[in-house]
Length: 262
Image (cartoon, rainbow, N blue to C red):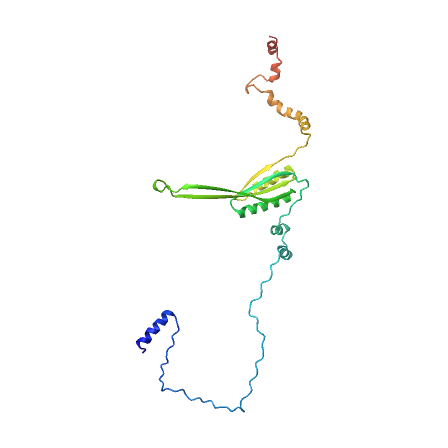
């Protein structure tokens, strides 16, 4: 076997992971076997063919194809699948109506703690406004509302150990211009019906009246008197009163007439 020095070197090479050359175990007396090949004369050698240049083969993978735009992808996909236009429109920007006068009618403010939910519902509100023929602008990012609290973790000797909490509210503003008040109410009712979780809404609605508002109130006065007259006739009387007379009949009676002359 190997001597002690050789074993120590082999162990060190294993620990260091270094290849260690090992001497052959054959004795110097052993000689190589004689070769059986015959020496060939220069006249017997055959000329070797000269190597020809071969074009290097491209083993690299082909480059990735360029990504098409959404419009091109949907056009080819829609021809084969025949999707409805309403489904294809979900992958495109929402359509908008153009405002004629630019008078604000409704300001809808959306609030949420999640950006994904907020952007999704804002896109949904804009698409709903288009189909109700409402000109819309937005969504406009509003300043964030940051709230922080500091709470004591424990009491007594651990009262200096405190914990901080933070809550950030994200907001978006959507404005309706030149819209019909009835269409605006229908739009808000549709959004309340299909409200998204984690998204709050706050709406400010304005109604525009003509300059002849006083004349319109005077014209509607007879109808108001017919509606409110029966309720005001029994004003100041008990419900179980057997006398079915109005307050005006009581003031015109002889009893009150005598009191007036005194």
